[in-house]
Image (tube, rainbow, N blue to C red; front, side, top):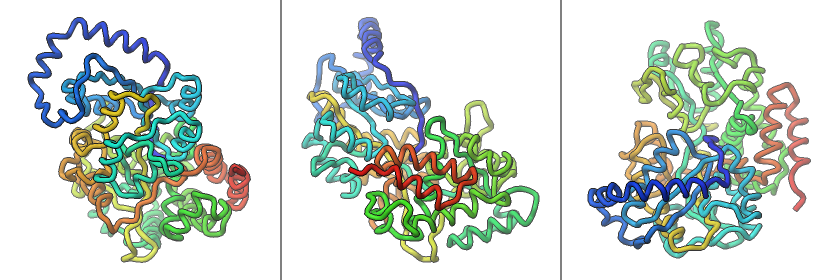
Length: 452
């Protein structure tokens, strides 16, 4: 799963729209002035609309929601389309119910291809327009387009992206202690054992707590190991249930991850014993690195945002800074680069010109560069200039996604049916860290896979 950064979506979009109309009545002169200050040449292709409004919802909130709104502000000014966005901690759980009741937003930022498929199967989604599909064909790989496709119908373009499997560390500690960046998983485990043997702190800090989604950071570990140990073909067979969840190759990945997550010698630096992984929030779990209480933390590229919590001291993310990250290494040095990641698919629940204008803009290289330039995120859009990213690590992440030699696979739990990927897999991780055996957990998860 990807980061859950939420605020509640509720039907009060109508109320918000009413407030927006009231504000418009008071600020028309300001809007006209703003339009005069904006170069609208990049937005002429989307047309102009008189007082049109598009409602949007997703899992993005707080600072990232603010940046999202900023990323389309010029589009609003130049087209006359007002976009009302709300995020939700319950978006994934409620969107199908809202769609069935006719209360869905015009546009949804769906973070799980499996959920998008469910919405498409329910008949609630509007296929992507020619403009959206043309942008996807130009700016994304066929794999990314497929994540927005259901039963040969294209429904939506990707939005942002993340790379899973970074191992965050302190460059200063590595330099002072002579640690080398591991080139294989075995070297990573040897480094972990060496740190543990020093005896002054645990090598890893881990947080699996994420409200109703508790356990998802552990699924990211497993997915990274499956892709590296068993390869992309087995990974694809696993997420589509061509092989069972309790296949020996999946058990091998769990056991490999268990050398860290189930080991008292390896975790939980600066936090407590193994059991504290379940109660430690994923947002704060890596922070003990800054105090020298652990050395390593496995989390995605989006974790950069959490190194600088509100009110905290400034933390530099750079290869010579306070923290940086290297990708979880392959089994063998020199193996082709394989990464897991996530993102959102932009779907529509209402058929309207203004909705498709907005979706076409979001699928463009113009929007992707706008948003990446605002900081904290990356995109798999091939039209993005990596140098627009806000840090050395994010520049590197975009280059990885744009490299045709990279093997990329979407987050496995997000591809699986919701009963597994957003339920029994998460819960299985919690039970497994809590003491259940690999075989017991895998058999339980396998039993929950829908029969049709």
